[in-house]
Amino acid sequence: MNDEQERVDRLNERLAQIRTRIANARKIAHREDDNIRIVAVTKYVEQDVVQLLIRAGLVDFGENRWQVAKPKVESVPSATWHFIGPLQRNKVRMVVPYFSWIHSVDRNELADDINRIASERGLLRNILLQVNVSQEEQKSGVDPEQLKPLLEHCAKLSHVQVVGLMAIGKQNAGVAEARAEFRQLKALRDEVQQQVGILLPELSMGMSNDFDIAVEEGATIVRIGRYLVNFDQDL
Ligand SMILES: *Cc1c(COP(=O)(O)O)cnc(C)c1O
Image (cartoon, rainbow, N blue to C red; front, side):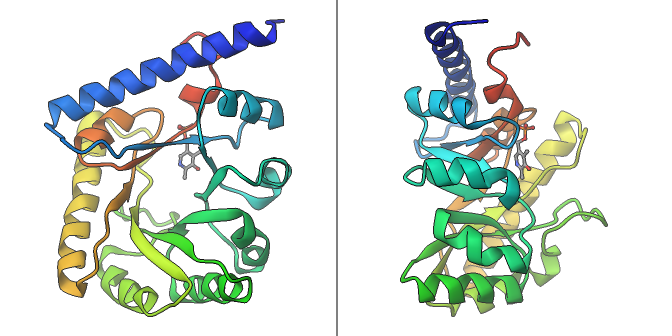
């Protein structure tokens, strides 16, 4: 067993690698902006690892299922929690108080539920609209053609603020395919924000396998799970 300090050292090393890769990707893309948020996806790990991640200076954490997230969010409610998975309407009441960001809004009814609960509790929630860019049947996310009406609907709600778009890349996509999807999400964002007249600064895209490509293509939020939380394992 590693002792605590050894684990912290390994985690810091992994985090440094991630930051270097992000910096390189920014350089390649000539990105001047410095607002890239690393969301540490903690769905695979327990509370103790969340504590280590906090010690390493991380502030944003992502979870995709309420049941798995519950003990972690309850023990660190002051962290910034991002809900990144499919959200069932009967879980909205539990999720909204803890998660100030919800990345996976893909239909009007869900946005309405989030807005209602946030309103009851006097909260304002950041939401992202999840788009099914790869048009996979089984995947959640709004179809690209339905994005504009969804945005127009959400823009009218008082207790949610639509801050951007999110996509999950196709599994086992190659570099070229991943890049094409990220590009498509950004193009959609540019198009729809022009059409509707709302700024959508955030692009949540890129995971362990492809976060540097996502940054090259304009990601402002990368959601990194395995590559970060498995810092105990060599790659
Ligand atoms: C699990 C998950 C991630 C993290 O995936 P890794 O490949 O482990 O980095 C990112 N986004 C969503 C929506 C997830 O469910």
